[in-house]
Amino acid sequence: MTGNFFYFLTFVTLFAAIGVVASKNPVYSVLFMILTFFALTGHYILLNAQFLAAVNFIVYMGAIMVLFLFVIMFLNMREDTEKHKPMLSKFAAAIAGGILFVVMIAALKDVNTQMMQPAVFDSQIGMVENLGKVLFRDYLLPFELASVLFLAAMAGAVMLGKREPGEQNRF
Amino acid sequence: MELDILLIKGLIIFAVFGITLLIATYSTYAERKVAAFIQDRVGPNRAGPFGLAQPLADAVKLFFKEEFVPANANKFLFIAGPSLAMLTACMSSAVIPFGGTLLIGGEYIHLQAIEVNIGILYVFGIVALGVYGIMIGGWASNNKFSLLGAIRAASQNISYELAMGMSIIALLLVTGTLSMRDIAAQQGQELFGVSGLNWNIFYQPVGFLIFIICAFAETNRVPFDLPECETELVGGYHTEYSSMGMGLYLFAEYVNIFVASAVMATLYFGGYNFPFMHQLGLPHNVVTILGTVVLFGKIFFFIFFFMWVRWTLPRFRYDQLMNLGWKILIPLSILNVIVTGGAILLKAELF
Image 1: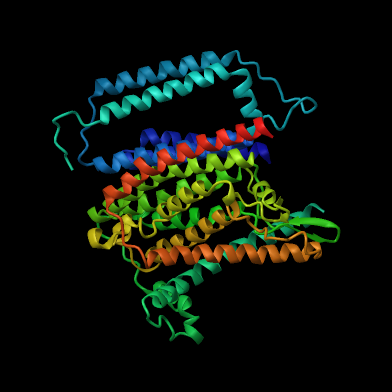
Image 2: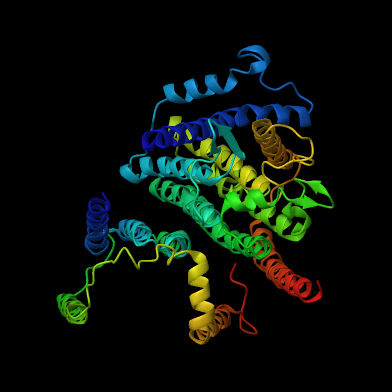
């Protein structure tokens, strides 16, 4: 049952991920990307990580993809008005992507694929309490540093968006 | 045994789904009656006694109208928009506990469709998803007014989601759990010797105020109904929709109001708990059924409140809406989180 569900989710993930790249209309690309994230959320639930699933759902599907869709709708790009990229950049992109793929395979080749041991497996490992304890006990410094990074990014965005002295109000 | 549990769960899910749709249906009737009452009119009174068959008549009318798809619209997404809006609206009532436990044949049955230990996050995620229906429908119509409505809906939802999330974080500091069932159960404890009155509104009044304002913005209700603002945008995101496509959008709004009311009643106003619930000495099942009735009373009050506000307040201007969201609600909610955290630390220090 779980195995079938995994194959189904994987199929949806890969299908949607290919759709992101292959579809000509950018709005379709974004919608396929939302579907990809939805399937990934399913994968998290299969891995017993409910909290990560919810956060993936809220942050990526609920907030970031809305912003993506927002920007693309604003630009209102259509397939007939879009200029096609030159052949050279297509080749460059294909080669760069292929090299990344090879690197991923090389990295995953030596992964220790142990089977799950039911006797010692803790099914509560992905629950929010355990995740919070791990984050605030074992990885407190990286966690805090990441929040500082976010703060810096936010301050930078505010700086960029701020009206300079003497600039006219454009709205 | 396995089959029994499945059957009971199925029945509860079916009941929750049915009640959600029924209440949403009669909210359309109630809205018109409340509007009529506030404006000193009579309201719908032709179809059936007191006009009670009016929602049915409306539905039949919408079904028999022509389903019109504009020539340059994206056909698939044009149909997908309202369907998605309705789907996401119906999904979120699944985790709300509509009552305590019923004791049948020595077994406790929870009156809740599904229990996940991240219940609040689930509701929050589905609410965040709801904006896609509006955005896709508005974009697919290929009409500038629809597109503007869709873009307004997106920016408004994102802005108010932040403040809403912050107000929920302050609430979570108090409760210490993400599960809706646990939050509802905690509020049944004693406060000043009165059982069932340990409501979160007494600990989080500011948080509740922020939450209810954001709930109005998330459900696109007056005074925040800028996405469908008819003085500026014809009909907003559903300008091009006719027949049941538009019906689904309108209906999804009422389902969202019901869910938002249920969430507010559960998170802040004690859920199915009522004062003196354990001191009356009533049997367990009677207390549970009374609790469910009380919960629906609270939900109906909030639905009425949504309508009351709609027919009383004027609409915001768009820049006022954004200022309220970003410059007032978000700083206030962050302050609320800090004060709540400080108060909890102080309490741990002193007592």
